[in-house]
Image (cartoon, rainbow, N blue to C red; front, side, top):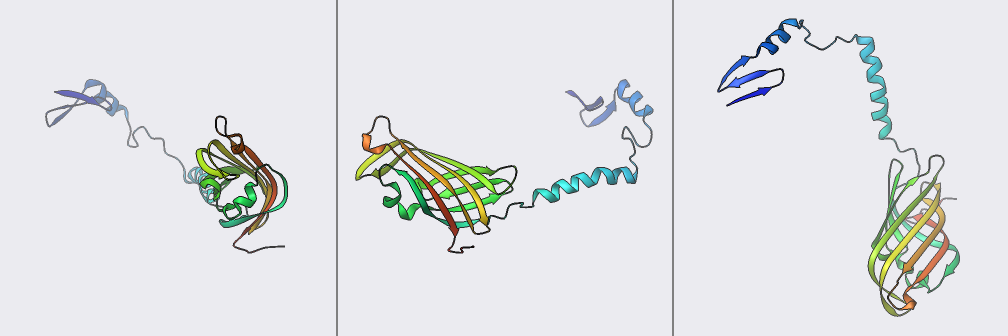
Length: 196
């Protein structure tokens, strides 16, 4: 059995032999082979951007701290079916910030929200959706087609952000009592470390 590997090296059993093409290619190479030598200053110029990119990728340009946050309404615009009052203890979540990416494991329906800091400033937006969630709404057990949560927020300091939240329960074929929305302005504080 013969196989050709690389520049035409043939291996027949355990004995290596060169094809005529490979032999002529090897004779035309100089001591460096086919690699062109690079001077030390040029190597440095190539290395600096790579080092800068790797060093900056670990930086967190945003001051928002990761941790457990409690959401408190400042103003409720719409609450069709008393979602906030019925689920007050579930309006908390664990925030994670990795570069520009923001994740929130939110207590309401165990929803994971994910999004990004906007290009400039301390504003971020996160979204999450839960499908086929079972939850009580106005005393009725509901199987929701979809529950979606959207948050637009602005960092106020390391341990606080505020913004607007929209929670939407969608139920097409279930009781009409199951479909409702909550819109509110909120304040989220990390572990009661309020900044002013």
